[in-house]
Image (cartoon, rainbow, N blue to C red; front, side, top):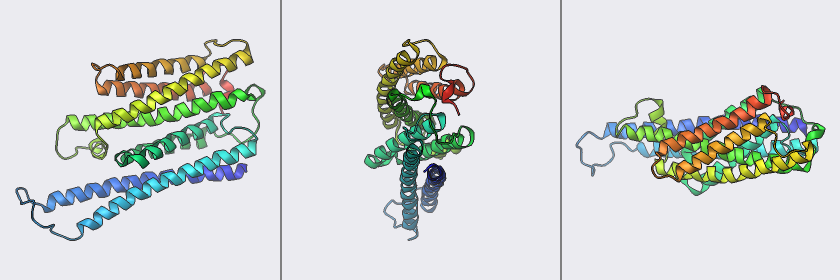
Length: 316
């Protein structure tokens, strides 16, 4: 089962990479179609003129097929990732998020699943899948290459029912924060493109931004993801405090992991406050979301691997 889990991990990583390529192809084909249409229709020509060639619809179908293929690849990757966690749980005889490797796989699965659910309901959010796929490839690549841990039993301090409660909530919140962060990055790209005014894209950032939903749509999605994630993260911090009292005899001791969990909580609270304040610019709130995810990444990697503390056993 452990070998099968590792195989499914590789399958998910490769499939996410295929999704990145498919999304990039869909963007490129759509751009070629628009460029071809603007070239074939002279300036000042009548809109009633028939299309110059019959091959244009073929390009539209190709673009749509690439986009559908990218979404299918994301769904297959998520299924392989879920299978990776299930088989790892069977091999280790416990919940499959007891170390950094497993935690990264779990939070990435949450983010991808959340995006798939949103994309199924709102087609305009499908271009965001490129960012989700790239994020999944980066995180899973780091997990597999740098912090991989063989399936096995946990240290005694982690053999508690609170592992399933506290760490599960933290993984769910982290996955929602990941997707909210990617939506915030997309918002910043789109806002920059809109501020430049109409015209041809100037550079890679504008080429990516033109495919994205409107700023207000991205703002609503990012806010809802962060608001839900904030509630789950608050519960995770509270559950961690209860677990700490049962294990170490105190609810809070300003351990580095606890400190940075609180810092993340404060930054995300500031983000939600900024979103509720009309005088705060949309891009300012998006930058706060980026800062919040930066604290989560620091808490995940630096606190576990560099800074010594009571949570140091969570590393590889």
